[in-house]
Image (tube, one colour):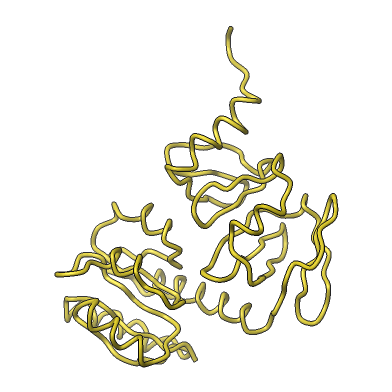
Length: 240
């Protein structure tokens, strides 16, 4: 079961989340709060895995609360304001739901949480050795060789990173900065606080998004200039 709380100053919004969650058998309601301060005190005493968090609230808003949250929780933001999407992904949230929340979209978000927690439970991997073209991941009592060329992107999830290859994904207890230092710099680039991408997988970029064959990844403002300078301009074809 995934134990969850709701932090939202609107009673009707909290009720809507509960109605959606009641349809998902692996979600277990724990409590709900109208402000972030009460939720923070509760989290110091009780164990939960998932927080449904509103952004616009009196006192401490959702993003401020998320920045100071010291314990590791999965967070799904729920808000009526889509303009916060990019900033929220920089804070390692699982998903961003815009009110009113349709059940199909809600279920997609909580499925991501279930997938992540299942990986975390089933795997205790660590990078034990790096070679020129591959690395070893300890996963489910096995050492699995992952070739750099097979990695599509890497996502940071609190105290873990999830390595997405072309057909599988692996989890290891390591932060984004550490694993980036072990990867070949000419082949991989950090594109936001939580994402590393294999450069050859990038098809195009715009203001705040990187597009690959199968994914759209956030491009953080503080990482965009370096990415363009190091990986785009060096291969840019233009008129003299």
